[in-house]
Image 1 (tube, helix red, strand yellow):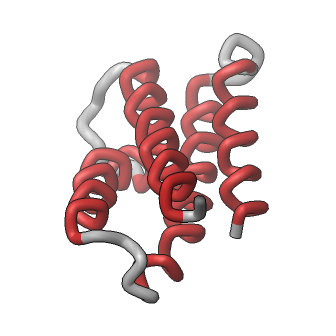
Image 2 (tube, rainbow, N blue to C red; image 1 turned 45 degrees about the vertical axis):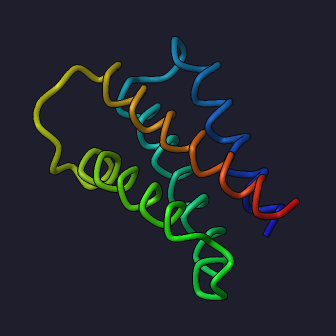
Image 3 (tube, rainbow, N blue to C red; image 1 turned 180 degrees about the vertical axis):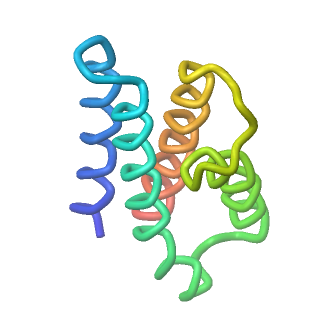
Length: 102
């Protein structure tokens, strides 16, 4: 599980670093992949009851912002705004997993 989390964090970092070298759409796609990896790593923790109600609400709120961007249903906003939103979602999931897996 830590390997998935680290992989997701690496993808997000690479997406941020390579922002000028890849298209905005590719950058968002990489960030969405990292977000999906974060959700995958948190799913068993949620199923095992290791996430508090507040943490589950935070994940749900984060998904409410990020999911439409990653599924293509988001309003037409600047690619930089989309990328920032998804990257912040990845950071939130990474922070949650880090705290739970201590």
